[in-house]
Length: 392
Image (cartoon, rainbow, N blue to C red; front, side):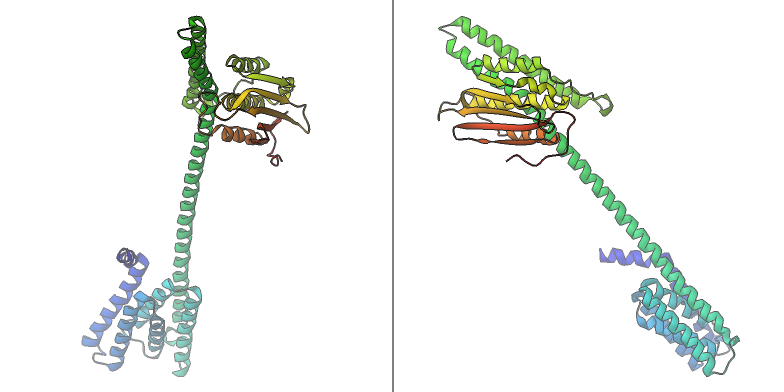
């Protein structure tokens, strides 16, 4: 990985351009040191040696590179070389500014300009001789371009990071929506199937017990099993249709009416559960979506009462208080070992009820009492409201 990164850095077009400028200029200087007018001059060879050292260390952005650039600039003022040592000095300063922080780059530029000015005054030259102001302008340009390139790269890196974060955020949001949808599907399937399967279980046991001694009772029980099974299939078909529909095809569910609640209570009475009710007319004051939640809550709570209770349950719906209707389902716990057949479950019913109520902004509580079990929920009488504090 480190080799790959270094390869990318070597292929940087800005770095390549600076290195090529310095290298080509040094090659021209080398030729001048051999065959030019100043061939064999010690100062020329020293300048070439400094340039080579500075170029070699430029890959590490060493401070020596900036020092060499300043020395070469001063040498250019003192004794302009025919091979263009100013180009090497500018290229080295650019390579330094390209990789170092802003403070270091500006400091190197100031040192470069200071060396030029010092060389100018020490040699007694006027400002124009030796291109003093041209070298200062070169220093400003090289530092400016190097820092501009750095700023552009930081922007690109930040933009890439931002896009990655946005992609990750969208991925997490999609995963969250998928998890929520899976929970919703699981809740719908549990709520729609659990009651009917409990009815099937009870009537199947009745049919088995009366198959020989009372065929008529067994036949009626099997008829009830058939009806419950058909209800399961219809509920599953509704859920599957919702899952297959596109978002634009989805329609709000039909509000639950009093007849549906009465049919639900009668279905429980048909499997032997005695249900006492009080104030069920208050359910008509619920918001439409809350009525559906109340029907599902009644269905699940009474199913648990039939499974684990002594065969009786009490349902109470209070008048709206502060915009909320309180619905309570209480049952007495059955003696140990006498729970209704089919009583084993996955323990997801209470979780589903709590999720439904909280989505509507209501409160939910379920737990054992001294001799039974109590489920209490507060549901909005109008539109769903922000979530309330938990009961109790």
